[in-house]
Amino acid sequence: MTITAPVATVNAIATVPLTLQILGTPALLWTSRPGQPTTDLTDTLTRRQRELLVFLALHPDGIARDTLAATLWPDAPIDRPFNSLHTTLTRLRRTLKTATDGTLIAIVTARSEHYRLDQSTVDTDYRHFSDALTTLRTAQTDTDRETARRQLVDSYRGELADGLNADWIDTPREATRRDALDAACELARSATDPNQALDLLETARSFDPYNERISETSCESKPSSDKPTPRPER
Image 1: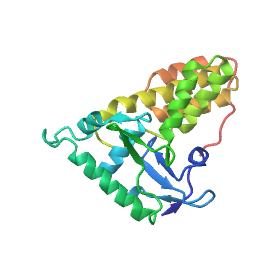
Image 2: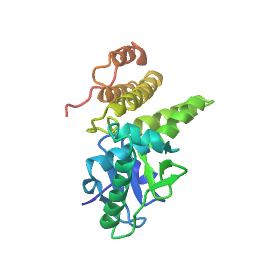
Image 3: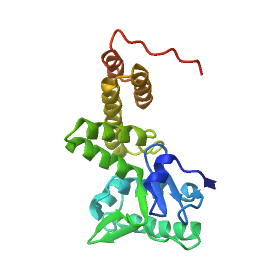
Image 4: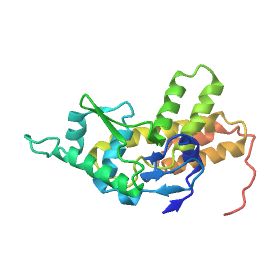
């Protein structure tokens, strides 16, 4: 299926053929050449292949084979702990080769029993989210902090790996939601335009509708003498 990729994705994958989105529902997108339409390869992947790609995306610097196998295949036979991993990787290569007419085969590299996504072939939205978070934590100016927070908010398309049910995803999923929510709340609190503050608070509520802190931020972010311009009903 040929689709139009989200703006954030297009900006992020200008120099690589594959983009893996894991913020929101996981998706694997392929662009055969710059400027060409984007093809969605997600439906060609099995559930286990998607889970493997999500896990690797969360570890851009790579992950030890023992940890990878133990996390995704905790019930693997003791005498053959890596069989399922190797089988999944082999089938993933075959799937990509077929889906891209032989253009792409391997997107996972393995060196010294250390596995990672090949960044020369596949980019991920989570890596850009993580980079923005690092920038925020090390920023020296308010301008840099605001820019990083906006990047976090703009790139958070939804719950991390939405639809993936696995025990190991719960902790990074909640941490990612909290980071996006904190960024939106801080932007709302510092906004001088009441309407912009309201928009940011609505965005924050969409990240976590049941978080009481968002209501508190709403009171703090707008001066009592300022009222947002009435909005037309949608």
